[in-house]
Length: 164
Image (cartoon, rainbow, N blue to C red; front, side, top):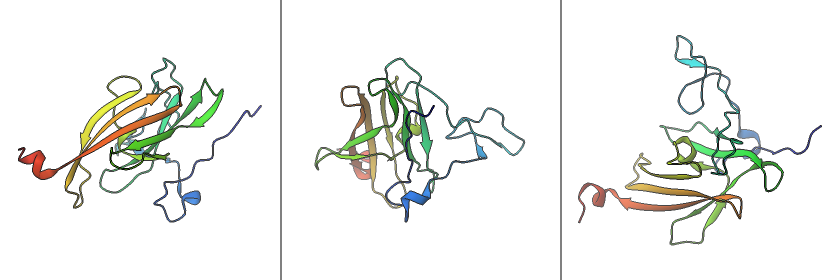
């Protein structure tokens, strides 16, 4: 019996997001978990690699990745919400403290990183390709609203390399 489904579309930057998301068949053991790696260092990924990403103590979420350029990967979290009693694609609220928070479903890098603890990430990364900032993402799961919240701050490289 089918209870509910979740339609997966690519990120908004894709030319046709509705047609753009593809599940990988054979990949390196980098973003997805690959249980059996072949001689070419690739294998069939475990797409439904269930983990506790919300911090509720239940391993009912998994991450999908959009392979991007130069190591930057859009990530999205899917799973079962006990509160909603259904399969969900978790929303992500991103705030930089300057503009109104934006709610989206794909976010760069976050869920490709290991959390500090279930439901919480805190890390810095450099977007590269001419960007002149370092990004710090502090991420937590808001159980009441059933979404991830990202507080994102940027620091110009000049202040990272030569702090005041």
